[in-house]
Image 1 (cartoon, rainbow, N blue to C red):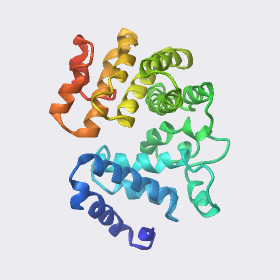
Image 2 (cartoon, rainbow, N blue to C red):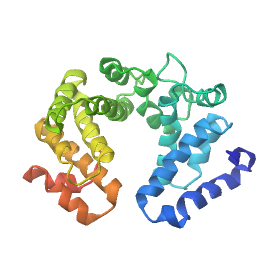
Image 3 (cartoon, rainbow, N blue to C red):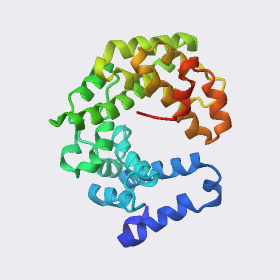
Image 4 (cartoon, one colour):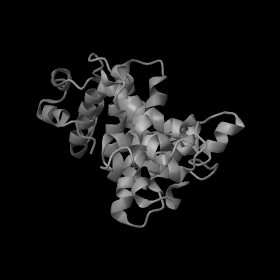
Length: 273
């Protein structure tokens, strides 16, 4: 892309015009979200700017760091390190900003602290392994001494590892109900107890995102089998996924009725925590 040729002060305006002003994209919040996330991919893979420039680019999209614009762009930048696969040398040269063979934690320790959550969230993906033991242990072993920060980083990483788990299970030639049961079993097998709820929640939410039809009730089966202290988070993630698909309170309420009765309200919170 030619954005790297523009002055830094102009770049955010280009992204804003493409993702925030185009009438087709503006028609649905889902399109806006995808535009911003995939723009982050573009910064990492198709531009020749440094990682620092890419992160600052995302950061300038909105004065509020926690805004959707900034967060979605950052997620796209770091997600790129998990998906290059076999590519030509030019693209791999750019992806090297967010990926180093044999080091799933690169470049997290080398960047400004406020960006590390997004960086560590894709640590398991940067292992390029389908071995769930490797994926989840990579999350557990994130090199952060501050316990509060580490909990947040591991939580994010488990969310991504759960998507890997889900992807493997969904390829199996078994009924969806059996797939839900297998996800629960594998979360129990591979996740550490203190983080297990993030495995259930991540798998449930990503299943909603992968299959947004309101007839897809199987993510609720995951939550129903989760431990009591994990249920609220699990159902909240289902609501979050449905909301990201439709941004419709009516559809959210309809879908959340599939929750256990005492957790319909959890689903309606649309919370990922």
